[in-house]
Length: 481
Ligand SMILES: [Zn+2]
Ligand SMILES: [Zn+2]
Ligand SMILES: [Zn+2]
Ligand SMILES: [Zn+2]
Ligand SMILES: [Zn+2]
Ligand SMILES: [Zn+2]
Image (cartoon, rainbow, N blue to C red; front, top):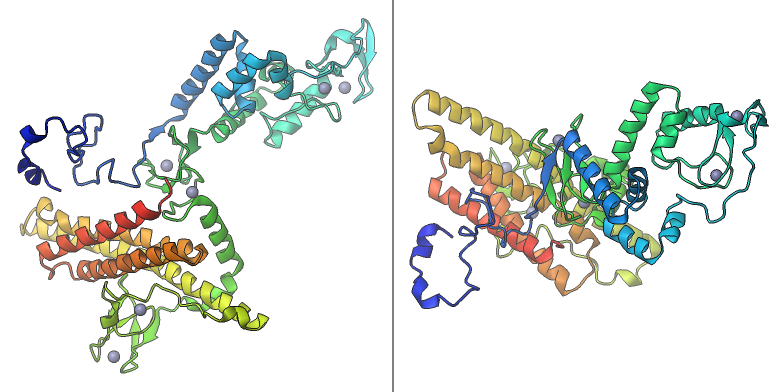
């Protein structure tokens, strides 16, 4: 919708109508000035998050510790331990505290249910770990009362930290699960460099345990993402450009959910041998049999020799790939498979998997090729600008088209794991219908982007619009919010 379309609207007639959608552009609580982006209410992928640095997060965690301290009137070390144990769920801690503070501490493995009675004594004492005799005042214990010599605590902590364990270190006594507080550990630890390592590791633990925080999975990236909602939504790190799912931290995978994509990726890894033969870069023209190499992302192929238009996936005539009757993305199961032999069923299962895998994989490859197209377009524009045939602004639409193509194809790629695991029925039919529509429009867009210079601008922009609409429709109907 454009601003001018809104101007036809007579506001005076509808003053009372609070529900009227002003198109989001008038929405005061959005600071998103980019009006090309879908509006908050219309965008099924909309997600609010912030990118933080380590110092910001340290400050944030300290604030949370302080808040709980003052709410429950407890020491900071206790507050920190409680938050750690309860994955930073402050409200749940306060709730439990209201019911019974002592039960909370026992459940949190901070206080023992029953204290071990051992006389700390005076004078000489023997440590039950190292059997060394030492003065009683060099021994210490946690709230549980299990007493050990300081040297043993020190060595024990060193080993734990070297193994990467910090926030979960328990008492040395067998079968005692009382947690070691930070200050107790730091007092016992003789090596300052391990103290630093401890601080670092426990910070990592805190971020990992915190439902609102996630490390950017980008290589060597120190950014930490924060969102108040733990959802499978797309995060883009502006620092390292990595895009990922906030909930599970792997490559963004809409419309497939986190559990399904994990299952799919595990299956693909297990079956990689079987699927290997698929990675062909050349196929023969189905009409004149000349060998054709695929060097673009588009699956609509045209034979260089006989000019036959065909589909790279199924080698069928491209004419049968219009959006009204696009069948190439739909797997047709044998309706009588239940009556077939076990072998036939196994073969069918493999056939089905390969069908989905082939398409999933092919889109991934197309994405790589279309990345090259994007680079090519960028340098072409640079050329044009240098030669004074237009400015960057004049040619920006070509880049926009190539960028949108990538976005649409990405979603398309991840429709295949979704469809693979879907139960048969009306919902699957609807999904496959929308998937086919998206397939057809993405290939049309790809075809036009590869021929961007000879494609009419209006035609290209229209195609962008159609493809993005198909993508959003599918996500709106099937992306779990
Ligand atoms: Zn000892
Ligand atoms: Zn103990
Ligand atoms: Zn990053
Ligand atoms: Zn996920
Ligand atoms: Zn041919
Ligand atoms: Zn096809």
